[in-house]
Length: 422
Image (cartoon, rainbow, N blue to C red; front, side, top):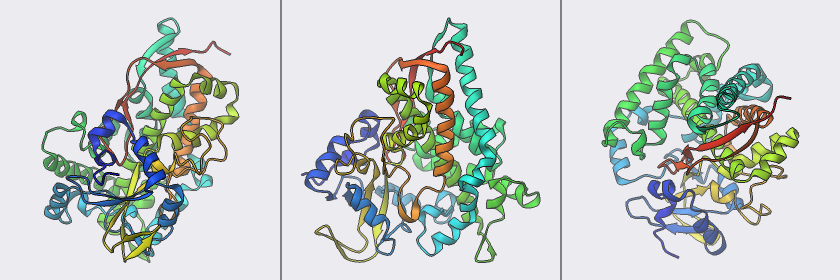
């Protein structure tokens, strides 16, 4: 098998064809720990099986996050070297920390994200879902019961944005600005999301915007704490001392941007799957008790975070391969979520799939801190959609974002018919 395998990391390929599931399936069969040397990228080992990803994720002493979770190009390495501790390079996040430091920083917010603590957001989550579906219903009613919309712009992007804005102190008036900034961050290779062709200039400007915006919120919450996550982070302490400025900014950055983008892509990709498989939509309409399992299947199916990088801290032999200290490993979560040895009919979307041990939220030290919130927001939206929308179908070709790390649909034209009033 070729050592290039550029399709595993090429944003243009993802935009044109989506996740490279055919290549991953072949790697799982023939070379599950495969050395890749794509032109223009740092070499890496592609880890494609579910069990191997679990094993590596649970061994942070041998496979570190501290050197970054994103595969780099020479241009990215040079840009990072030039910026030093400025912009995004200075905003350390918990995803790029190893134990014991990671555990100390995770504890700052982990209590806030438990199901019991998140119950305080139930009303806000439900209100967001109701408002968005109200708009869809009103538009369809004005057109005789059927309407067409871009589901990403109208619903999938706005729902998690409203919830995260509520907990992180972003005013509703500023949500379009934050949405633009989030698109620019995760769509750095997508011309639709970039203000200029100069990536370096775009990223520098974006880092400055994030710094200026969230610095004001941090200062406000330190002066006047409230019952929200913004205050918890602004007042966070590590081993008794105040959390550093860059680390505090990094916490805001990763909570807002990663939390929004991943949930948006799960929602839009899940609705695409339901539009393409109307029998699964009808199952949900008949039996609302399937909504929790449907959410798990949507996360498995879409796997919004395609991969994360690890760096070997020592020479190891893993599954018969000699991995050297400093080697990069790509944990291909989207491949693991189609692993034939774990999932029955892995290429079939089933809202009643159980059990469903997907890795859509990761595993081990870095299991997604916001997983409960992501599930709750998706459940609320599915409840509203399935109770009030009778049927839906694609009204055009979806457009995917030019991105690999956090991948999804950026435009999803759907045609929907509202249900008769019950």
